Image 1 (tube, rainbow, N blue to C red):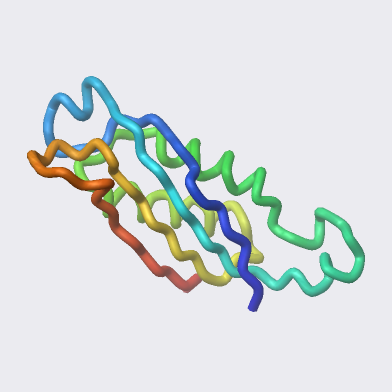
Image 2: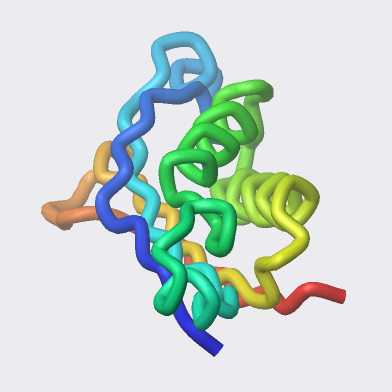
Length: 120
């Protein structure tokens, strides 16, 4: 199976347990690998023979910003579900959702959750 990667997608959203996070919002960063057979696209050079990363980015952004979630785990799952629903050709997704502005009194780059999901 082949893999397409979206790395460092920055999205502003309103997820978090604290009320301020849902009111003020913050930046999140999404990395996603999705697995799809691109053999035909490699030979025929046609966009219809792959899953367009531009379309995937639109689905990710809409799913991630449509609601407010307490947990980044839930937000990441919602994104996976939306991508699977939108694109039949995707067999597996690995998503890392990073929260660089998490309200933790410590010096860190980000906190993150990584989900690995296979199409059921």
